[in-house]
Length: 491
Image (cartoon, rainbow, N blue to C red; front, top):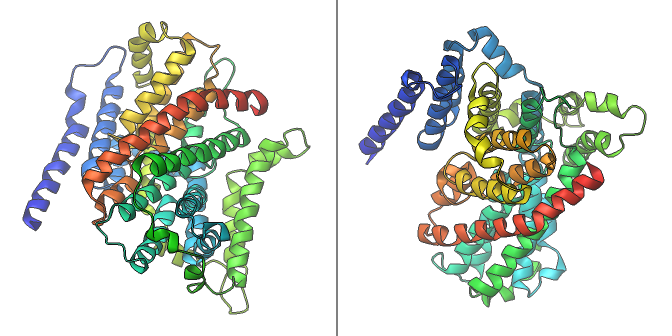
């Protein structure tokens, strides 16, 4: 078995590297330059390696291949790759969210939700509350955190209530934990993939006569919080009234079960980290919320430095035990998500290159799609692009798919400049990241679910498409008008 695995690994690696190296020899697509063919081949090879092999080293190889291409010298490529302010924000947000988990703050958050009296004897309210906790942890820490916190908790619950691992309810709840974590994943405009995609569209539209299209953080956050609550409510109602798993034993559960495993009271370190995280988020949001107040533009210009400054202070201040509030090295080695970090940074850099004029790829997309896009009404286009997001993001990496779809949105915007391009972009960013659950290649969180031996693959492939379908209908029926309304008020 091990020999077979190694052989498959080598074959997929060779295929991915071959795409990177030899794609450039295919005849150029219309309007695509020689450099564009090189970059597009590196892009496709990177997606292949991310999907079938490994994410960290393939991200690094991707950047090296760009440095060896005719796009730019190696020094310039490496400088652009690590020198982007968004990379700095992502890195230090990862450190801060990692600290929440490393020092046990997430355990206190989980315990808070699990000890609400309204869950007593109400199984579906209990599952709903767990989902809300997963959404918030997925948004402001990481879906990895929410999944790894709540899977073991629910395993203990089901074991205590004499459920078998093969029973339907434990498997459905395990799937719902991943679903809710992914629903929360795109919520924050200053975290991980959401931040990168907002910045990418601003870069894409930087050369437009009216300037870059920048989504206000507050508008984005209001929409994502609202639609997340609606989606999760709909999925719970569907699970309760359509799937109808047997929840009789779960009715015996009350908060006393969780009080037995109550964590110790929050210590000074945990309180300091929690407060600092809240202050950091507030400082990043306030400039978008109070634009007319003097000094807000200056604070907004410091946005990239806020997570760095907060982290620096927490590393500097010593507590009574003689140790800093945050041990940077410990958090970086234990809880920093290096694979996710390099995927985000590589995807962001490749997206920037793919859309540069020197490649001609945007011109090719516009040339190919303009005849079709010009025939679509804004509503039809939005519904179609959301559908494409749901289909494609479950086949490939959700972040990369969204990069591609943003170029399609730009192409339509150039044909029909009267559309609410901010609203469409918010919808695509949110849905691309939130629905990446059907296949393991869609996201690392979907891969975790497929790798859980306690969940039947047949059940995943039965339920995941249904959940994505529910999300799509709600995004079209409620999400489109909601996004337009919010952008009209706060945009």
